Length: 456
Image (cartoon, rainbow, N blue to C red; front, side, top):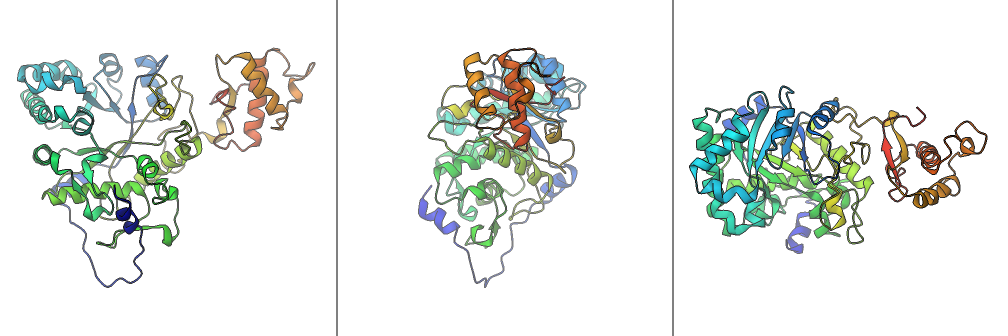
């Protein structure tokens, strides 16, 4: 995106001489808004070593009070385990299946039969995501997208499931050009034929437009222009608010601006009755040297504030009357993902279900019960080699000033006398002394947070 346009977006308008009226939503969207409460769900990727069994995964979702999940496929065992749980599920058609489904109604009907009708309504499948970022990652498959969507919809109609289960396709934010300021945004014209057909379908079937929106990438690509505070939903002084010079709408965070750029882009194609569903958003907790802002502090801040923002139901500056639901990317760190390092570090939890960091979402109900700030501890990571643990233990008991008196010979916590137990004691002492602040339980990967008291 062009830097001078981004800079213009950040100019504060001091003298307002015009009154501007936001685009009004259609009655269909208003009815949808009144019917559906906005929610926060999670994406579940499975490139995880030692992934929880389906039964344990579902038990974990219930423990965390997670009510909406998106799968990147239609895993039979997970769908079975989700039966009778009231957890609402998006199932997905992988990109490599688009050709078969788009070219054969029979294949589409078989897919619906095996992956949807076989489980619904015991498993509450609410939507089918057809492909993922097809238009931008595999543009050669773009002509297959609408035939696949229409074939699957026809199969849902034949199964009499079309009113209960929606169909859409997640798209990258890069399908929109000139996203800042939002009022100047428009869809990439080379994709217009497919996007126009897609929006007509979504309007006709009252389905959402799924968008993968990442303020992290907007910030990384525009450092020095987009302030970090705007990307993380942090409180802003008026001088740091983003102002759209055409509408004079004030934006206090990047995500709202991205969502409104989608609404303006749809308006340019005369579509005003399709709701935006944020199918992915998140922030990585770790990255390589080229990604210095992929930190635990920033990931915690972004996701905690995102959850609060959605549950506040404050909408966007253009549409304060409607709040988009969001699926956080993602539930688990996918440690098997290819580099860069950040690709394996988007999760709220490690694969063993311990939290990567503690979300701070007090006041947002019981969602994501890992906000257990008063019941968390820091212990040595399972399987860490003794030399690494000893180095971290020496630091904790030395420069870190942890209280290590109880793990000295003859004291109450000396036994069992091994570096794993001594390190856990020292790590937790340091963690507690630091007020359980994000980043105080890391020790270069030698420590992890747990909700189980190590003294027990």
